[in-house]
Length: 597
Ligand SMILES: Cc1cc2nc3c(=O)[nH]c(=O)nc-3n(C[C@H](O)[C@H](O)[C@H](O)COP(=O)(O)OP(=O)(O)OC[C@H]3O[C@@H](n4cnc5c(N)ncnc54)[C@H](O)[C@@H]3O)c2cc1C
Image 1 (cartoon, rainbow, N blue to C red):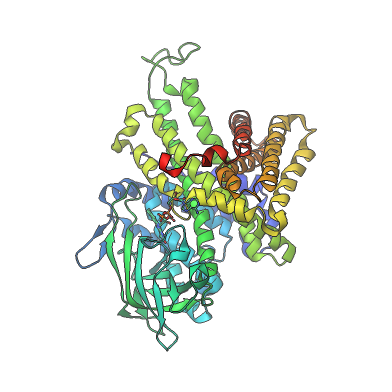
Image 2 (image 1 turned 30 degrees about the horizontal axis):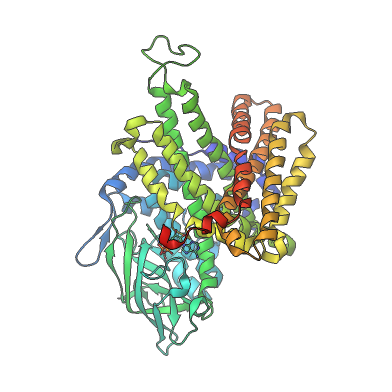
């Protein structure tokens, strides 16, 4: 059975040495989050994930969720107790303001816990993950009454949350939503319609489920401009917070699907259910975007998380499995064969996963820190820059980390040979679980279009120019440093490719939008490579500084430096191919008439 060890040490290195988290002590509760406290929190979270969630991962996959004839849905053995422990440990409310029962700590720490939990048990982690997303939307757009009614119970894990967007005829194009909301005359609405693919839509983990539902108020305009967001509890809540009557919402069926079997994916029927508006009428997408953006980062983290846990197990297997001899002569002459980790092709795969994991984790933490700045800084300029960063990086992280997270789960499975294809080794589950992250929360092709069509031109390209300047400045400042040359020179070249691709879009996509559509996916990956390259350059700089201080960390820092060099030499050059692909334009993509396919 696979095992999991949370990468606490790597996270601490990133927070303390690369991003110097103490620089943010002017932000709300950051000053309270001392290095000792952060370490203690992460160790505690790691323990829960390693000892409680990870052992349930395979059980969840094998048992799945069951819908009973009366519409109840039960989750796999052990999930209920684990969810109780997760809520009681304060993990759901880690970053929620104390007035609603949370701990008010940085969101950055929540994002770390999301990685640990998703590595340990992705299907389980989605339950509290969705609750955290719903809390975020209510915090920003809910009324005081809604917040005090729902948030404390959600924070403690007694109630959970969901997001209801998708309908049979409406996936990517939310303008097609049909679910109807009719005013009841008392401030509430009667919600009727069918939602499909609703994660955690029904289950037995909590006493109540708080559904956030997109619906169209009777007479509202067509398209996305007529969509509103409603809070629809499974059990109605009395004004004193106690549970009242059952609401008109039920689970019609659950899906049998490729992975995340422990998470119930439900068809939800709203049959005149009572709901209350969140935020303004017809501005529902705006309100739901808070939840969607949080969820997109959460999904990006799922990609990293599956890559990390698959890597850890593949490394162990590669050290144990004896096959063949090293090309340079036996490395374990006392054994019938060498462990497969001696083979360059096995190492190539393991290094590629490792180089991704560490850079992707850095990208997640860098972005999570920007989210904290965007929400907590008192300086308007700082907030704006951080918000720009979030907007720009969210589609990049969602698309790139989930694509490569899946690729890496496959690479790790490959290290097992035929055993990787056999369920009991657990590698197949990582592959199956990782696959969905590329699809939901906006399929990755849509993330690419969001990046190129909306985020690049936004505010005259302000966000992307800030990113280019930051990377270019780093390169200039470190170009003369001999030890940094192996990192800076490839990064400069890759940044040049990204700038050329951006210019190409400016010159070729305005008049011919297909040029943008056809190149967007390559651009998203080109962007992700440069962003990860920048992370590696910063990691290398911090690793060199830490190594110079002594303290017996030289071997660990050398491991980072060599992994960074692998990224620069063997992964970053892909930017050239991506640029070539983008600048070939849309012609060959669009030339074939549909009937010729
Ligand atoms: C396991 C699971 C859990 C889910 N959980 C939830 C949940 O909790 N809540 C919820 O609301 N939904 C959920 N979903 C739904 C999910 O978000 C949608 O499936 C997803 O957004 C895509 O919608 P669709 O399936 O209708 O595909 P479609 O929108 O039909 O898209 C099909 C393909 O066409 C592409 N495409 C569509 N339009 C364009 C375009 N304009 N340009 C380029 N390409 C385009 C897409 O990228 C995709 O590859 C879940 C789905 C699954 C499978």
